[in-house]
Image (cartoon, rainbow, N blue to C red; front, side):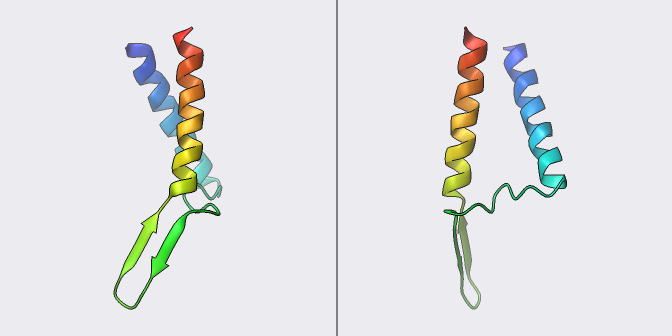
Length: 64
């Protein structure tokens, strides 16, 4: 369990560094954004799918 927590922490740090470097994580094509007069809705579906696949591969690698 400790290894998984360290791994999740490292992934979060890596994503933070990528975002600081200018990589548009969270604003990918396929993410739904609706802006009206006094209403805004954002649903990051593409970002969620990509992060899910990456985390699944990482966790599957460490379980073996």
